[in-house]
Length: 133
Image (cartoon, rainbow, N blue to C red; front, side, top):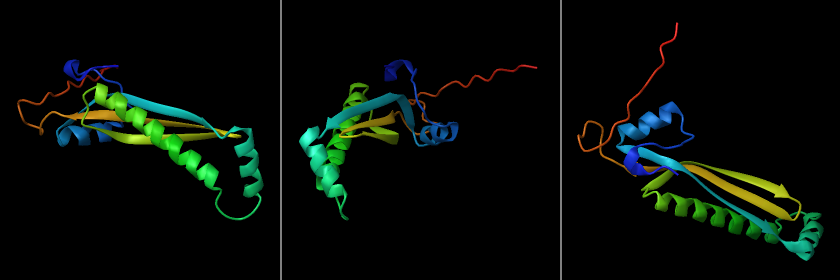
């Protein structure tokens, strides 16, 4: 993981999103990820399958999804805190159901406030564009 002190970071931000953040005084500090894999077990999976044949919500699956999501987001936040971030933007949640198993991954870009554009205390990135003919 990159640290905020050397201004090197990984991110999945678009160039527009990157410049919008800079304009508001924020600098990306790194890509952060959290994931969780949950199982309902054989009995829970069979019970949910039977309940799933009727109309309505299947509470076991709903609870599983909420718990897995909260755990993944919490782990992503922990990574952001280790980078000294003030927040996380562009968070994407990927949910992959696998029978009675479920994997949830949270991916986002950790950001830190460095000052409003034009403030000499804020760091500004250097843009390098290749000029090939």
